[in-house]
Length: 277
Length: 290
Image (cartoon, rainbow over all chains, first blue to last red; front, side):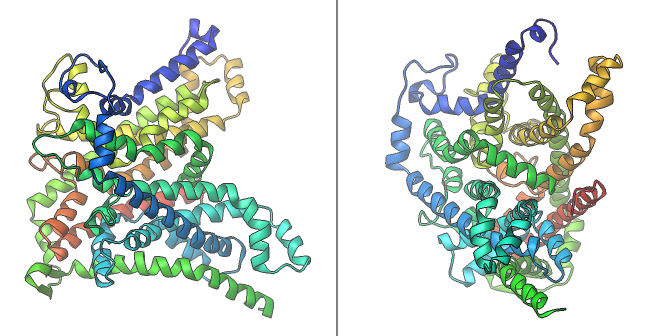
């Protein structure tokens, strides 16, 4: 609580909080600075800021590393995971929220417990499974593993969002002779769209950031995602800090876009996911 | 049951089937399989595959490396969650009074949370660089070897984890604070409560529920954390940051002992499920679970 002069000038207090939070983000901003610092200035402090800006690190990462391919893999895997998880999740959530499913309580309990599963517990059997199915080093392996991992949370979120929608609209449509799938598509889907967007964002983000499955199931640039490429970023004689910084910035573009541009959806999904209300 | 109800039930099951099938094949089945694997001696490169009963677990009981990893895991989780909660409540209180620039404030805050853990690891590896790291520079030119010193690596790791997860706690508390009606504070003011009294007697008690949820939720995540320590410190130096998840991973995929590694991951599994059970109970008690 800031008192005194700040209390009389609320904008000053607001500004102080913003400056404080900008300070909190310094570790990331430092990586941004590093990514445009000339090689020769990297290992010398001070000065903190570069004397000139360079795009060399980005050029190296984009032209000479596997990061562009990894970005493409990440985009593909995350996009497909989101579509698949959302499709399966919407159907399941609709059934749980609206239809008389047997053993519903047990299924819901299983779904909540499922969202707490540690990845490390399923990674060894999944590895054997993927190998047996010949899916090692493919997008499919990652999409399947990520989808199953994201599904519990997605179903839980969507079922909650569907329950918030008044049932009268669907009943009216049913009286007009609409079938269940028609009602689902034309009445429910438009109303649940904002909630579905939240769930989709969280799935995409989880899938984009996911490391353990991707590190274990991939072997080459055919399917390596950005976190894996970054973790394995090669250095010949010394660590290429500038290139790593540039690669980090590229790897964090989608998450930052979500936080900055699509924040309301993200916040809504996050809160609903933690509170299970 | 009428024919219509039966039809609705059938439809419900049909809609649920794809999701349950996916979860069954890719979550439930592997979860059972890992229990089975943990009872085996299984080293694929030597073609070894035999049932051994509880041998792996009996070995764990006397395995110093396992107990070290268990201590590191619990210490990491406890310190990380405690710091997150204290800082998170502080930030939430700051945000509560924010009138303008709320969205920008949340963007700056959530940035750290949204990054891939591998990026966070790389960011902190560079910050902790002994010669050219920003941390040592800000400490007045110190030459601490953060990630190489057995006494500093775990604190360094915890700091990186707090940085990345505190925003989540802050957001939860902030959302709760926004839902407190203004007249509660007005009434306190009328009653002559000062700022400190208001904080202790009104704001913090109102946060109690959400903090309980946040603590359990975050503990669960801290116990199963893997990416950050695997990339930032690789469990080192001298095993001071080797958590159970890292030990499990190394046994599974670096020394290729699928049976033994599975036993370690079953322990993580059990720990996490214990906390998840407490979490569910808390939600239910607080009337938050339908």
